[in-house]
Length: 436
Image (tube, rainbow, N blue to C red):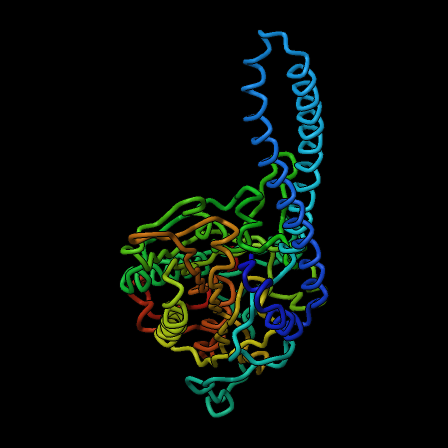
């Protein structure tokens, strides 16, 4: 949710942000009209309420004089009582109109995305800026063999079973088996070890949340088509643990001296992938369910940009430890999502596709989510909304794809990165004689 002051005092800034996102800037004028109507009705309500109070003060003394049987007093009291009744009726209707006007303004407000960062590239999905490229993709031709894709490697290693996943659950589902399952568990443990080293508190949050949590994080806006809903319980399956982590302190006032509060959440993630028809239909790059380790922080708004830079460095350190070649992108305004003002993605090289694909992402959401979730911090006088930041450290399926394909050998075996060996307990993943 935006700060109403921004809309009232700098409407052109909000319009410019809407244009940069490719969103409807007409919402600004629509909100101004609705807000003006609400404020007018609210002012009128307050004036009539004050008049009603003054009238009550005048009625009291007259009621005390009725014992004298003065007809003039009786007439004056009757007139005042009649006016009081009319004012009460008017107030009742004004309250209805005022509340309806407020609801209309709030509905429009809910349609605004966050104000984009002035430094974010302007444009759509393909207008990102490459910040840096780290590592060099392997020359498989020089190594004397053509790289296999993760599907073939997964079958050789007995690590991925897509056929049975589809049989049991449908397309875009899978089983991780044998070393595939162990590889995910090792990656989760490695990610959590890195996160705790950086000062994050490990959390396993619920994967089902109430509408307030999903709405509060901005996932019932443009992203709602990808959300699974359980109508019988009115609960949502999360597409990222960002949602329950953001709502962890919902309706709370935090001690500002404790900021930043950093959490690393591990959870299953569920996505309908409604807009991905025909994309990545084979393999486990784009699936309906995967596990993920997500970084999340609540911080002082003035520290948000620096914390965002920290998150990116954390992700780069993790991918470097996995010995993956990757590049860092500054995502364009039209591809930021509703809550973020700026987003950096890390894309790992996928040899079988000869392309970089997203494996991590980090976003600065400023106070957009905390306003919706009513999360503030206080040090002495007053309380202010905190900034929230999120970042994917390890998304199981895509990280597994990148590891298998980049570290494969000619015989179908896969070398394990040095940093992962202590967590996995093996240095090489070797093909199995027969699939289970």
